[in-house]
Image 1 (cartoon, rainbow, N blue to C red):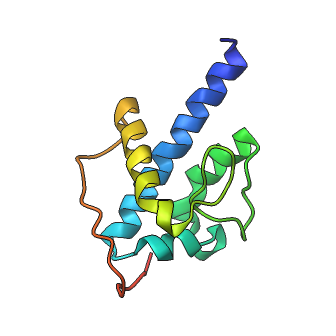
Image 2 (tube, rainbow, N blue to C red):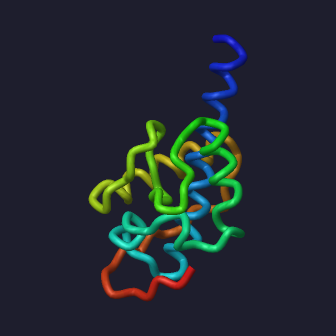
Amino acid sequence: MDSKAGLDNFLHAGLLAVQERLGRHLVDRGWTCRQMAGVCLQDLPDRLTGTLLRCRRALGLPAGGNDPVFIDECGRAVLAVGMEPHLRRCRSTAERMGATAPPSVFPYAAGHSHTP
């Protein structure tokens, strides 16, 4: 593996780890999978998206205000039906990188407030 490929792999893993932290932050505040699938970068404060944007730009992935917050490694939006498995995958990646806090529960339920 050349150094560019190694850096890209590291950045992709970092992208997932950042999404895991952001997802945990939103879930802890009552967000649902549907709400997270519908949120765009401009909908969240810069303090929550700064690292995410840097990773995306380094990888050439969508990083505009109207782009979805949660994306896969190819830049495709994660749909509500796939959000929970996506966040589990993000968590697994973050754990392998040593970049995560103790496990949290993802209480996905409709009707919760979604204040970031």
